[in-house]
Image (tube, rainbow, N blue to C red; front, side, top):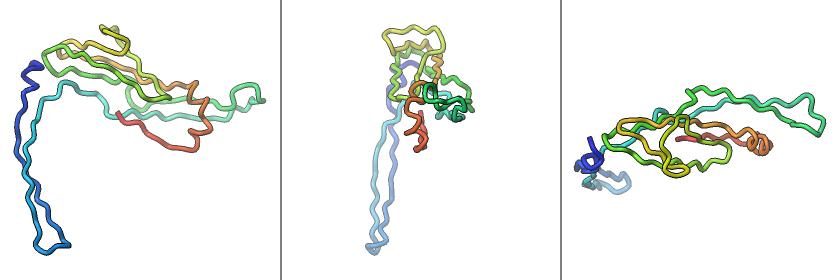
Length: 151
């Protein structure tokens, strides 16, 4: 399937029935029409889980690192982006996180710094890497919060 063919929408009709318990015998049907298109890409994973060990450095005397941080990853360390169509896919990888880097794991055609060209029905492999220097720099704050990053 080409990008032009996949961009043609398949129109579907649906309805939602709304009932209100506060107003006796009130109900309303909302009809809507949606355009569905074939997706061009698929991700191999929906989330990455990093489990880490944070250990107080027993040799800390004020001049070295107070904390030692190491990660073990439960998932495969690669995130694959698959091009599902018969046309080339140009995509841009944007990383808006502070504590993780996203790097490409393959030699892929790169049109600009973060733009990648994925061949027809090919894939792009990305690696998500914790930035230990920044994590350790902000460790006092991070010890107080819990967060997750979903892709």
